[in-house]
Length: 302
Image 1 (cartoon, rainbow, N blue to C red):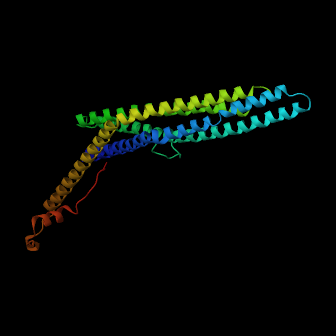
Image 2 (cartoon, rainbow, N blue to C red):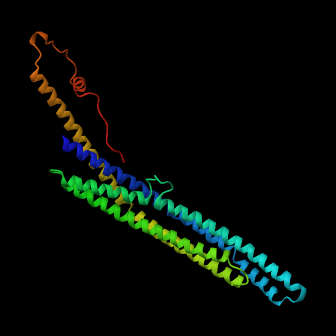
Image 3 (tube, rainbow, N blue to C red):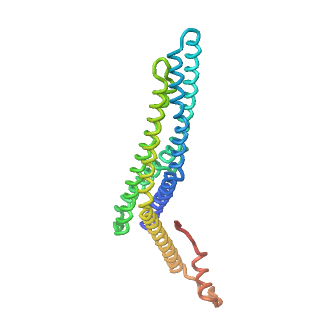
């Protein structure tokens, strides 16, 4: 019976970890789709496109500052500085928008709170724990079965997927950092040290490239996860089936142990014939319920 209880405990922990990771992978698949991160990145690219006319505006201000003479020279220079500052503010705003996308991706990778269990990092840690539980099961007598081997293979499969997706999401976040660094350089530049129009053109290009590469990564990961969703479902369902089977076996063992204990007590302390009373006839199903106690329901449901 101890073996049954221990086996049920470990398989329940494994199924809990697997089903949580299953939920996480479905969430990540959704978030990386065209309707979520993909759409957000598309909007950021459209926002950047609105800054492109500023290249010509800055070029015109530069030209006026260069050709101005006499009393017109100082106002033309000041106008260039003001125009440049306006576009510096616009670029900084676009960088802040990319920062929000970074945080969205960071939530998928490491969670939004310290105790967030439904993120890729937490999922990887939970599956590590599941693999340790499987090692314990394999050391138990008569538990190194085909089902356990199949369950271990499924957990290892999910662990590989979760770790790979986690690295890819981190790469997306780093890619957006490249775009934001370009924005920071533009925001802190001094008109006298750079040619404003060329610097704005380069900055927009670098930020747009960063967005495009991030979107491409997201689309690839989304497609791969969607393609393997049936496999994730199968592993989760099998883990639940194994855990529920172990729980049922434990409950049956507990029931038999209780019946045996009752029989032993009855043999040691038999009821005197004078104290015995006939039992009123009841339907068998009702009597069974009285002997077995109320029906117990348990186990995980996927």
